[in-house]
Image (tube, rainbow, N blue to C red):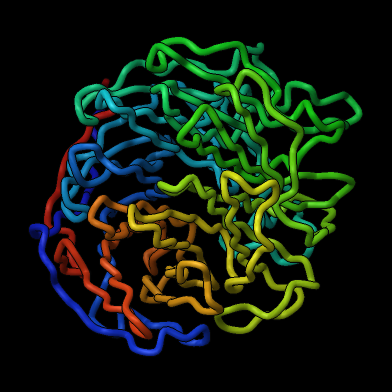
Amino acid sequence: MARAATIGALAGFAALLTFAFSGASADVLTDLPSRGIHAKQQTSGSDNVKPFMVARPAGGVYLAWAHTAGGQTQIVCSRSADGGTYSAPVVISTAGMFLDLGAENAPNLATDSHGGLYVVWTAGSAPAPIVPATNHAHEHGDAGATGKKSAGHPPRPGNLNIWLSRSDDDGKTFSAPIRVNDDADGAEHRFPTVAVDHEGAICVAWLDKRKKQTDGSDMARVYFARSIDRGSTFSKNIDATSGQPYPICHCCRVAIDPDTTHGITIAFRNDINDLRDIFLLHSKNGGQDFEAPVAIEQTHWIYPSCPMDGPSIATDAAGVLHAAWMTMAPGVANPLFGTSEKADCKILYTTRSSTAPTPDAPTFLAAGHHPRVTVTPAGQTYIAYHQGQSLVLCAVTPGLHGKISAFQLSDGKGTSGYPAIVSMPDGSILCAWQEKLSTDSTQIFTIRLNLSQGVGSTQVTQLASSNPHTNSTTQNRSTAR
């Protein structure tokens, strides 16, 4: 059965608008739409949610997301040579897969040096049960963490497993999905993340409930698997968190990032008697085993349920790990940008040198949710997150020096959330996010910017020119593989 979808086409790669933002102080938010710099709506029609991006080796990006129509949801992927004009999306998931898109669950991408593109996601073999409607805003993150215990998560599909598919032709076609977790159906497996290590091996980490006891104890763990044949088969799954006796937070995404040697770092939110701080796992031997988890913060946030808001990490060319995450700990100091109440969700940021035994003390950037971090080849750090209804991008001054530059990317007309961010070889930044429109549908928006840092100012240039009000190219896509 054919399904029509619309994906926006942008004009060629060109500088459209440039302005200088002077006095890059911590208490100023520059509203880019009011300056004539607009994001582009890339999809239309039925819901398109949970975008993720990775840089394309030939230039540009790959963009994956979940498309829903007629009660069916699929993982799809598109490519762009300039971050503006995207190809017709290709369906990756197969018939009979029931996707789990609750909380931060989304497709995740990685590329290798051979031109391979890898996509991982969570799907079950049985539909979610139908139950009476309840307040599940906390699970989906539309309103963010409220400081109040959630009414409960929406029902999820049965037999949730981790799946991976590979493309060897620039995202035009994909292999049949293979299952990454090696246990029997029944236990939940969620929030997969994928990366390619220095040897070209495919590394996948996820939250796994195979050890959950009948009394609910040992709820979830971080599991890891590695493939040395480009995702055709995977090693025996290992419990990367076996170095601690406690389970971990079971509804916050995990993050993975290999370093320039044999190291692999995984970030996750812990659950030590309701302590919800972020911890790091590290392997020095390509994931054969992991050291005991180490806290990346000492905020000691105690919370009785899952905040559904996980960490993001990225390693720069010098081997420095950059991390961003959310906390609601009341004792955190004033933010670098804006204001914050004790109960607000707070974006924290820190770095850790490859030679340092512990990370630097975290810096409170701003109030917000669901941060994503990236680092440019020149070492500039950018963090995207959503604050209220808006999508915000922070340019973090190297070494911080007590200030950041903050830019509002969305126009505030709809509720924006779940950002994705990637840095390009030329130092530009490409962001994507989902936004709920007045039509009640949720769509994907993107923007590509070049933020040139100067002394006391930031020059903003939009790349890949666009008309923010139209989607000029309509493509057909089929559910047939």
